[in-house]
Amino acid sequence: MISPELQKKMDGGVLYDPSDPSLMDLQRERLRMVQEYNSIDPRNQKEREQMVRCMFASVGENVYIEAPFYANWAGLKVTLGRNVYINFNCTLVDDAPIEIGDYVMIGPNVTICTAEHPLDYEERQKGLQMNRGVIIGNNAWLGAGVIINPGVTIGEGAVIGSGSVVTKDIPPYALAYGVPAVVRKYLK
Image: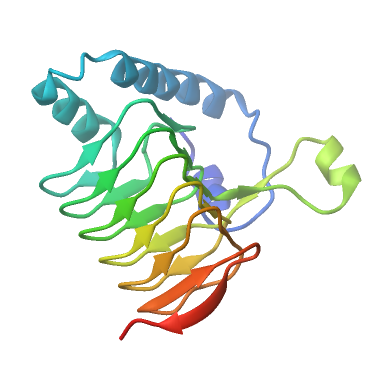
């Protein structure tokens, strides 16, 4: 079990040591869950649904996650709204909370990151990291190969074009794409 003090650091953008033994033991168990999910026969949707409900912090109705799927913590801090579709090869670096709203579509090969490392190389040498949560609003669509950086909020109804790297918040109903992603127009 993670101590409340360490949990607060992990979720609050404060440097901490991710090699803490209490974290490593729990993370190994969570990674085993991801491996188990990815090995479920795709014809066995009931078993997949049950496993998703065991792995994630909360799950709405009609959530579908294609395998393979990857997550540092198997969705321990991830909330999924209703009618969420996650395509093949999604990677969630879920060291801090990730909130995914209702009717969100996530294309193949999308990566959502909450963990980051210090700019100071001496702190990186110590293996320290910090985390900032990610929020994806209702009705958002992330195209294939999108990367979402730590601390980013994608507004309701926003669309992120394929191959984009999102480094800053995207407002609601915006179409954004590029490296880094830039708002190109508003959809509403």
